[in-house]
Image 1 (cartoon, rainbow, N blue to C red):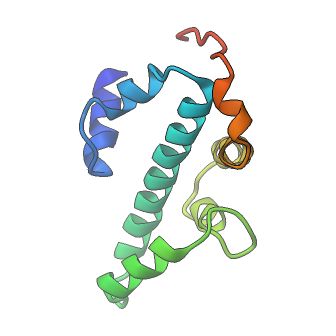
Image 2 (cartoon, helix red, strand yellow; image 1 turned 30 degrees about the horizontal axis):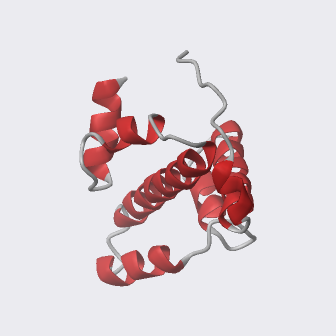
Amino acid sequence: MMEESKHLASLIHVPPKTIYDIFKSSSDWEFILKIDALLEAAARKVVKVAFAANDKMDPDDMEEFVDTLPMRGRTSLLKLLEATGCGKEESHLIDCVRILRNGFAHDITQIELHPVPRTPS
C-alpha cells in the first residue's frame, strides 16, 4: 500500500510521504480536509489524463478548464470523473468526503474534535 501511495503522490506532484502523513493526522478535522484535497487532486489528474488523449484539445486550455471546475454539481469534476469510467462507489466516496470537508471547513468549533480511531484494513 505504501508503494501505491508513493506512486499516487508522484502523479499529483506531492512529496512521497504526504499520504502517510495524512493518515497520521492528529484530528478528524485535519484528516478530512487533507484527504479531500488529496482526492480532489487525484480526480483532477484523472480527468486531465482523459482529456489529454484527445489530440484536438489545446493542453494548456484543457488544464486551465479542469482546474476551474467545481467538485460537485451538474457541470462538475465529479460528473467528468464518472464519464472517465470512475465507479459509482468511488465517486460517492469522493462526494461524501467533500460533504464532510465542507462541514468541517465551515465550522471552526469542530477543530477540537478528538479523532475516531482508524484501524488499518
